[in-house]
Length: 85
Image (cartoon, rainbow, N blue to C red; front, side):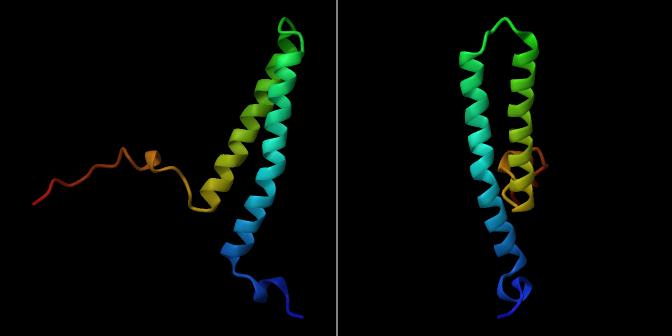
């Protein structure tokens, strides 16, 4: 039996890792949303922490997308384009 490095390409390992991380991130995001619905809206400290959790999940998803080379096309949309000849 060979090592993981010889059995899988780095892209395959990264893809699998990203896939496995997105499931718990999605669950964390869903829990934060649910808590924002049931916890008292007047408690500013709780709402700030829930917003922070959602921001961290979004940041983690952006990191995974960037690592996979799947950054949305909007990131490159501001680059100048040469006019047709």
